[in-house]
Image (cartoon, rainbow, N blue to C red; front, top):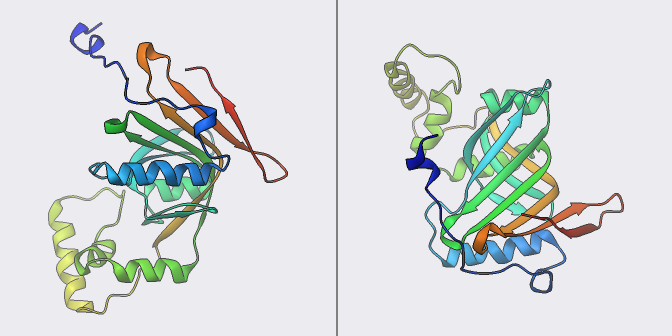
Length: 213
């Protein structure tokens, strides 16, 4: 074992997470933690790990950005033909992880995924910088390409084609992850962390349980 790696550790002591301190609704609890993260000036606070899987269980994960959330779920945008898009089309189950090390906190979310309404994808796409809109057209995301010059050539071609009026590609848009499990993790001393898990019941109510760390 590489001891220089194995010896890396940190004792978490900032806060606790008790049942008496949390909201009975996990989305409202997420809002509470989200606002505290925003107020802490965490860099890339909306960065989250998205885990997907093929139908036969081969997993993959990457970092994406949260762009919206509400009681219905958590929204991100991507190329529908990308690796994650293909996996979500094949297996619409996914997981998210937020890790805010400055607050010694983690949030895990599991749920089912579907595309959002095209009008919402249009509205967000049109709010992006022109360069990002061109980029959505220029990159055949997750496909093998021979060189970076292909991207640069595509970019120039689409700049000339569209000018400043750039439509949303039909292969690009939003997904919403509709949660059925949300877990809030607060680091505690001696690795005896606090973990509170909410599970969505058949009647639509959330059941909260404490998990051992």
